[in-house]
Image (tube, rainbow, N blue to C red; front, top):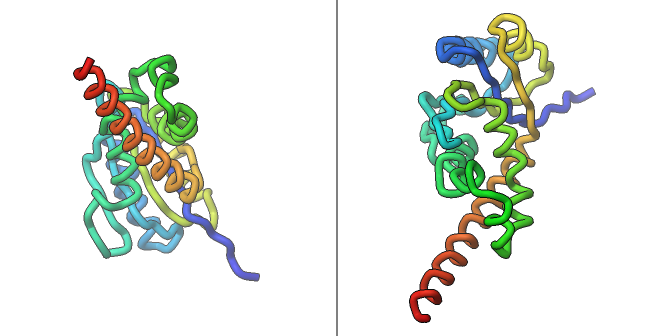
Length: 185
């Protein structure tokens, strides 16, 4: 019987920054011991105004080593960029006035879940990994470090990031168009 593993995005939250770094370190060990197969991992902080910023990043694959082009980098980039601000404090009425309201609302699920899991002024860890057995991470996060973990399918997260990027581009085009049309009046 072949083992079926899918990539998962794990969002973890801890009471203190030191526990986030401890988890970051111990997850490296779980990867080295082949208990999980890590792909990318970052320690992130949820700054005020719903901005997520990365404090540390690791590419387990040994490839790019650059967070910017990674899935975690794109997730953090959206949450730290204009759309993240939009998700954080714009009302439904303002979002509802754009043509792409449905796309923006659909894409909010992954981002809202991330922001809800790591509350403002707290630190967490985002990990993309394949887990044959989720006990290793659960034991570390829940039992040993007193944190919590939320899992999302990596393909769903990737899809929603693409949707959000498209919605962000459309919102920018719409805003520019409205602004320049307004100036002509």
